[in-house]
Length: 425
Image (cartoon, rainbow, N blue to C red; front, side):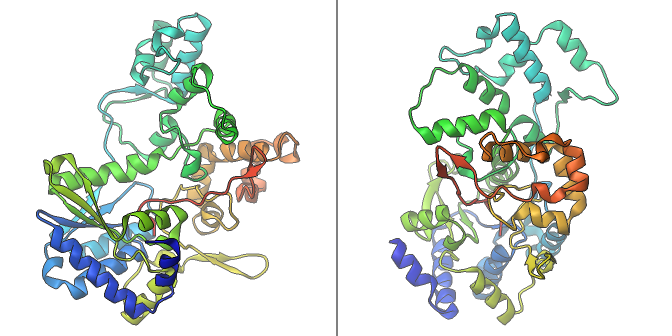
């Protein structure tokens, strides 16, 4: 489908879109040989899709599995709503996917950095590097820890923790420590690896690039600890484990092309229903089904009002700015998601007003420091009074200092790639 055709579909009346969604849902059920499932986030889009399926396909709906991805950093309002609706509508078919646990003990990033610095100082760093300069593995680095540091790391300390014990839940803060903060969109996260691996790549890799935008991205990455790995670790991987256990072969999702350029492009090239694969299906096809692809936010809210569909109270929360304008939460997603920080009235600036305790936690755990580094890069070397104030003081006295980064200049180009957060609606 061409982009102009998508635009033409998006302006058609809601009745047409409901009929189209019904057709696509029917196609999804018709190709299922094992187990169909719905990716449910507790957000408005997946709730509307679930309502459509229950209304028009009651028999199939009775056997539909509902997979709710609980990342551990859900809005409390969305978490409560998802669980309540899951029990009411889904019963025994409602499953909550949780992040996994570490299979062995490991060091925190600060400890990994000390090990790397030791190996550099002693001239032994090549022992943990591949031939081209990349780190062999994180395990290889940790095994090279000298006895002196190992003893320090494993000695209990009341204030400093150097290790992650075996069986540690891969929480949001584990992801942040090992990979980085979910700041900026996926276009800024080309190196999907642990931060210590990225440090080695940036310093020792012999891979060369002449792409000015890519080189500028590396310059940002040298200064700022950012990553989108949390989406895979907290959302995708837990859901796929549940899917494997249920032998899911068709996954219904409430994704809309209007949400981002990435989703628009995916819909244009793949359509409503597209084939994929899963190892647990032993060669049988796996399908992604997106019946709401041509819907818009206005369609979702119109449907909710017309058919009295329940929705998370999160969407009724917001704040009024100094000009008297109201800003409501538009997407549920994860509490700590900072992918839209390039835009005004972004997720984190809204969170500061609606959930100040959570905002303070993220900022004090390190997000504020990374945002300040980005602001410094944006100014291209020009200093600001904010650069001389401690981050803690800024959090207390000028919390709005972390509300946005309006423009980030990369090689004299503005990079403003919208986020595309999986299952955030």
